[in-house]
Length: 347
Ligand SMILES: NC(=O)c1ccc[n+]([C@@H]2O[C@H](COP(=O)([O-])OP(=O)(O)OC[C@H]3O[C@@H](n4cnc5c(N)ncnc54)[C@H](O)[C@@H]3O)[C@@H](O)[C@H]2O)c1
Image (cartoon, rainbow, N blue to C red; front, side, top):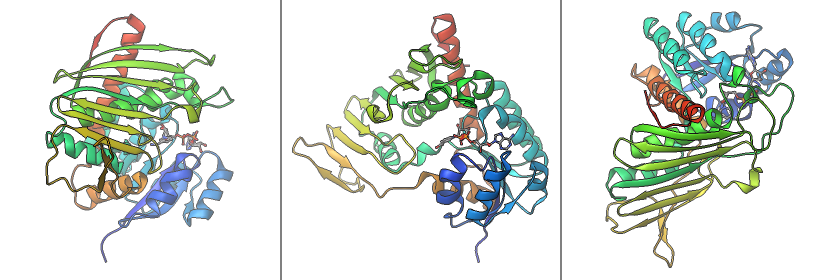
């Protein structure tokens, strides 16, 4: 029988319970869930029961179990310490985004994992969205021409409430920008390459908490392309369609709703020249747009299978810590730009 990676989960009660355990670890061909821990013992007991995992009473107990890898889905301010604790116990770690709260934290995690020779991944799972993979293929084939402009949007309604760690930079590293804008920035780098410099505004437009509820960043890529990221905690969920727009000298690829947690959304390409070898499931509208509708991919299953396979094959994970660090560097430059009111080079 082919090998299955044994997983532990720290912070079982949030996105882990909603998505990553049921859709990812329990569905992945090359993974199995062994043990879970959450600071909320009652929630952890429920998750353990519903997923057939052992209920660990502490991180130490979880790390003592017979596991190969740990998925960390706690508030961002806990990532750095917990990743390093797992690495010191010799476990591979898939850390939720963002990879800690700062560049320094991300670097410390990477260094500890390097010293302990364990793999570190960052759960920037929107790279696995099927439409995004098809768009990337078109761009790599040159079908978009020279990249010129992109827009990525991710917004939601996030009102003040007790214990909301994203609403305080001390526990979340920031607000909408680091929490949701990070996905947008990561996708745009996947499509257009490295960002060279940024200009950014942040604000509290509606909600009166410590983290920003509003952010717009302009990105200037090394290849000369431009992009904007708009991300808000103060736009009703149904009002934001999470647009993704990619423009080049030969056309555009336009999507709504593909940036998100579920396999959803629509993508259409308007390309000057269409190659014959493009094989994604597609149809043409009267306006000659090419509908890009590949078989959906569950991004949580994909990220768990990919990281598990990296351990099995003893290779670097596809979405490794370097991408998480890269993301932190761009976000840090955005926050710096917003603070100084100046364009900032990405370090
Ligand atoms: N990629 C995605 O789709 C996605 C979606 C949501 C959240 N996230 C990321 O996942 C992480 C968690 O976000 P969330 O929305 O699930 O948050 P959440 O607050 O809903 O859940 C966090 C869980 O961690 C637990 N926790 C808190 N302190 C702990 C500790 N010291 N030890 C163990 N458990 C502890 C909490 O009790 C809670 O169950 C964040 O990094 C966030 O950015 C990713």
